[in-house]
Length: 186
Image 1 (cartoon, rainbow, N blue to C red):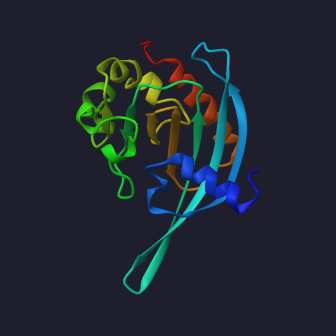
Image 2 (cartoon, rainbow, N blue to C red):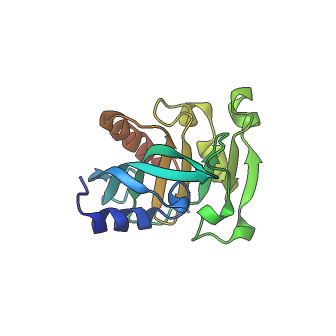
């Protein structure tokens, strides 16, 4: 568990982009390690978290709670973002600080995933990544299904609205690590 306020702030600052781009406070954050399935033989730092953000609308406000996993790899990942329909988080090139905007292309995932993913947007710089990951057997895994995903720089992150039990976040970390292991080389 990341107990100290400064440690939680440092962890949040590492996430960059959505879902933390609008601020908020971690209600819970835990760190650990996994093996890199990409063949490096090194360890992957894993952070499981729940974030509470407060939005003001005139005289009222509401809280948005999200939960997810961030994995930090010992290598650079090919960029991709998967954005299911959401009022909170929309596809944005700003989520990719290590990838120039002109390299990103936006696709609708309907043709690859079926009509139930009609509003899912995908931002990607390499079509091989789209082909490797945007498949029902990958995106449809139990903990990945319906979550926002982003790979950029050395980080892979997956999140969704609402709280998730710690054991489900651990399963999400494993599935996200497996997803990164499917990335094409070079």
